Structure formats: C-alpha cells, structure tokens
Length: 305
Image (cartoon, rainbow, N blue to C red; front, side, top):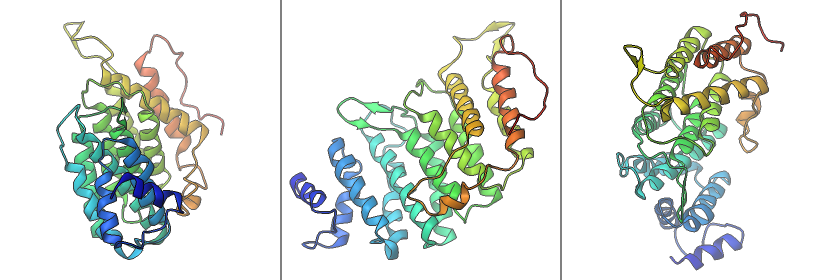
C-alpha cells in the first residue's frame, strides 16, 4: 500500500484497517521496519505495530509475530556501513516490544522466549555496524536497540540465574569486542540500563557480578610490549568500556525506574537492587583503576545510602 494509505491509518486513530486482513497489514508493516526512509519505519510501521500490540490485537498470535520478525536479526549480518543494519536493529526493537507484552500478560512458552534469546545474543555479539544516526536514513542504533532487547529478556520470567548470567557475559563481550566505532548516541546508557534491569531481578550475587566487572576493568588497561604501548590508547572499545562503566555507576548511584507502559516494571523496580552498595564500590574500583594516578585511594567502606 502507498505511504498515503498508511498515513490515513495513522491519522484516523491507528485502528487495524478493515479493508484488508490483519495478516496482510502485518506482513507489510514488518517489511517496512527495514525501510531506509525513516518516515516509513519510525512514523508508520513501528508506531502502528506497537499500538496494536499494546491493544492486544496480537495476543493470540504473539509467538508467530515474533517468529516472523526474528529472522531479521540475521539479515545482512556481518555487513558494516550498508542499509541492512536497519532491518537488524528494528527487528531487535520490535522483539523487545513483543517480549514486553509477554512479560505483562504471560502469553508465551519458555521454549519460544529462550529460542529468541539464543537468536538475540548470537546476533548482538556479531553485529559489526555500530552507527547510531545515518544521514538521510535516520536512526540505525543497533547497539542501543540490542540493549533494549537484552533488557526485555532480562525481565522475562523464563530467564533464571543461568540465563541472566549469560546475558551479563554477552554484554561484556559486546562492550569489549574491538571496533572502530566510538559510541556517542547514548549506547552506554542503554546498555547500563539493561544491566540495571538484570540486577533488579536479584538473582545474581556479587560472586558473579564482581568478577564480571573486573573483566570489564581489564579492558580499560592498555596492552604493552616491553613497556611500550602497542597502539594509540584508549582504543574505541576501551573508550566505550569506560563510558559504559561510568554510566552503570551513575545509574547505581541515582537509581533507575521502569518503563511507564510496562505494568510488570512497577514491582521489578520498586526497590533498589540487592547488594547495591557492594556493587557501587566494585564499579568504582574499576573506574579508579583506569587512572590510578588521578583518583585518591579509598577504603571499601560502604557509601551512604
């Protein structure tokens, strides 16, 4: 259908069109999620799909909808700098919304959600295109949208201690993997929020999280050969790691809140994460280790709550 047709749907209440089947409309809108024109995907496809999702239009079709979108995570995977990243990125964003609906309404099986988790984590650590904004094509944002997808998985009742530990490792892999891109469109905040969402589950103790933080801290220290730097430092990945740890520290210190449109977030974010004081100190240890010449050493006394 033409852009004018879909604009009329937007302007008349975003209702499901009555002149064609839901299946036909959905297939076309899902295809539009990868459109290089930002008006088509950001002003038509994404808002219509998320509106119908929130209205329960897809409640009996939720698993099938996600199964139709999930292959988009593999579309052009390995490419960097072309338009294929848009389909991968918006497939991730839409899957996050579908999982959000399931987290509120409990509509899908564990097998379905765990299967999407495997696809999501496999895609995320292999994504090469980290561009946030693309001139004339708008937001690509694969790193940020992937963080949103991991946060949605972290909320899932189907994810227990083992699966949440895997998500932590995937986030570390993503942050530490060498790249030519320096994140500058809020990717560090979105990834830190994914970790905060995971920590709010209170399923992982400090014996898991602190070694994970130490692994990230190792990524801040320059490699040396015979006392000399091997290359310019910090590398983009080290800079991204530093920004991520600082974002995580700030979110732990200030506290974060859930999404207003997700009922399940009211309970999840009602209290601060367990072991918050210890985790604050552990994050600070890694930040201090990046520039030990700069920061005063401190004791491991707990900060004031």
